[in-house]
Image (cartoon, rainbow, N blue to C red; front, side, top):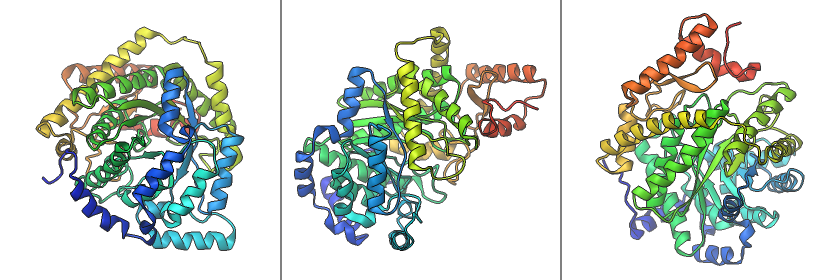
Length: 483
């Protein structure tokens, strides 16, 4: 196995870098020394790490929307609207699907057709095609920091261009932007590509320029058990830290049971810091991110606002560092800028109203923390063991053995055997644990929880429960109860 979790040699990175920058014409615009000087003149308020640290110090929660359109001027106007009207703390630039697949020619055609027709014909912003000069216009026309959000297994050129342009956070990783997004990309490849990205971020850090990195916690976005997203987030943090990353945000997708969501965010924060420290990475700043519900949304906007508000309550109680805000138009396609701003206002109002309120049963939170922490430790212990101490080797072997697994994933490099289901309180448990390395205590716990639901609903434990739960929120419920 060629992939290792070892800090890259500079010569090795530079040899690969020449090939990466020649992938598309705009790669020639990247000049690291010039980028270092540009960052030196950038106000600290435009650094994601700065606003995250400030939020952590003040116990505040930041808000960030999703947004991206293909015409540069329209994209800038969209971000300005979300900054001014929506009061976003961090702005996004969501990348289009062609760029995510490294299809820059097709993205260029999409830009030209969008300009010709005067409307968006791509589902995001094709940053590679605009190059450093075009992307820098975004940074210079907003007041708050901007993060790159995408879904790219091979994001090397995208990272080179956007970081050189002044973006100060970059989402994704070798697992989270491969397994949920691609079918045929081997993990050895995507881990290598993302080691390149993390090494690049480490190069900036050597110059005192701290670029935040963030794992994509929701994964497939459908009933992903907390222990799965947390384990993978910790793994990506360890990979990033080895290459020199100094600021890392671990992400989590809202499941819907407030007790479980609060416990999960607590454990995610605690264990990420613990594993980083245990592996010798003691100088990495850790923050947490909650994504509003990533599954199906109700088409009715009033009901959709209720889902958003419900997720915001978990954010408020857990004091998560940042919320990725969904909109009331999730069920119908790409939201308008007005809907996006309304969702930001809605979320902030809930956070304000929840300030200093603490009505959660802490004993129940602690009980849930015990379960999640045990699950995560068992998974990571086995991954580390399979890798013989090397987390990168352990990832590949772990997915091959089903010790790491993601439900409903398109990738053929994960078993997708584990099957989630809600218990009678709406917490996400396991209908089938696949090959996850859980012990008898956990297996009996899941069985007891499902039996409680079975008895309440008067039906047998079956796969129908899983199906019902997948569609429940879009139909107006948390748990997929029989009619």
